[in-house]
Image 1 (cartoon, one colour):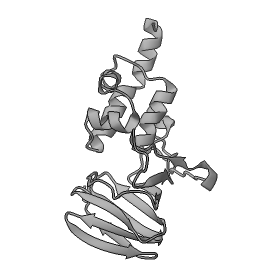
Image 2 (tube, helix red, strand yellow):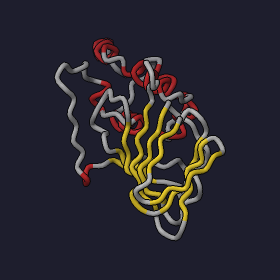
Image 3 (cartoon, helix red, strand yellow):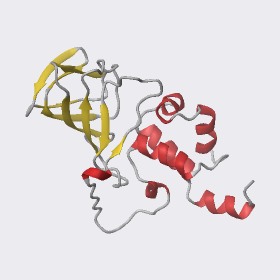
Image 4 (spheres, helix red, strand yellow):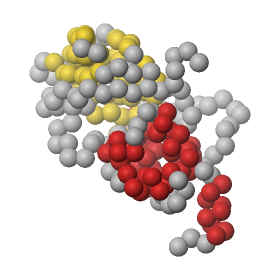
Length: 199
């Protein structure tokens, strides 16, 4: 049980409202966020309402889903230009959905330490034993640059087959999915935007 002093100090950081703001910006429901984090919707609801404070490991699981660092929840906006470097060995792998033995893709964040960013960049692998992804939608825009292999991207029922060196930009607020083609893994750089294209 936290003392009133500790509770009041933690309330100053507004961790719950910050999580809720990230979730709404991503257009995720509590159930969807629970699926991505492995936490229960009830716990997430209590955290967002300030009735419970997450442990650091729990907060890190939430942060990884939104592609932000822990500092996003504790620091004020900085006035100096934001610079964040991610070394190859420091890339963070996003967790697969619970129960997925053969995920359709594996994402590694390329800009995890940068908080408050307007886009998110990932290194993606589409493994040989991975099934096509389920149709999903998020944010407002997505850009994919295929590094190797062959990848089919389905956007609102229209398919585009991409080879290494090909790129695609599309409206990610409509249903889209990915499917690896051929006998080799496909790799790509994926950049997503959660904000509106025109403010």
